[in-house]
Length: 262
Image (tube, rainbow, N blue to C red; front, side, top):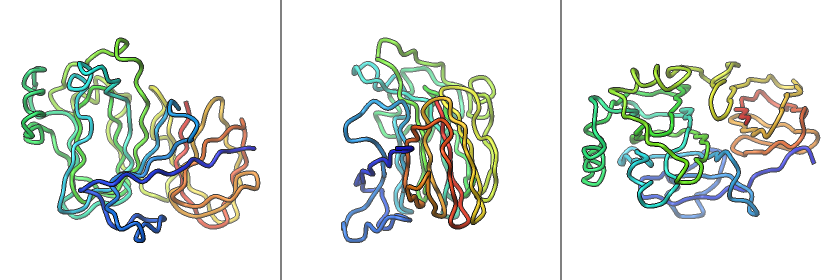
């Protein structure tokens, strides 16, 4: 079998959305905040792929700082990336802090629910891409749909807390191989080439077929369109773990997808 279609798991959140593109969840009667993909028999795949949806009335914070969870024995921080699929007017994300913060101040702000006041906020729009190193505090604001790809951290005793950068823009230069970028659907190019995993955005026209090269594990994440992988049908909103070195991806309509490798 050239690929494994990963199983979606819907996670209900108060800040979630009632309608999730490509997935008819209206019958569930729930607010979906996350849609995670995985294999039922495994919980330790090196990459986690998930959609995140925040509604316009709420903002939420996601594992903002390693030092908050590591003392509890949890793996905590992880390298990750966000590709923005949609954003309401005025939507924004916070990555890094405005001023230098010591660990005690950050922990106190997080516990008191005021960490957002210390964050370095950035407006977002569809097609924006962000890379977030492990240990970087980060917040997803209201009215945003995105796909997140994150690399699981090692055992708690293997982790180190990174110093908090003065801001995301300064910290990205020091800790990240690239700053934020804008790559809307319809483009083809490399989003991330160094670090824990690689990521490309790909565009295909209807009828195209390509053989993607994969030296290790690879995740095929279709964002738009439909087609097949060596005869297996795929459509937008799914996630596939590819098991062959050169799978043939065919587009039955104009399509865009993310291709993650590790």
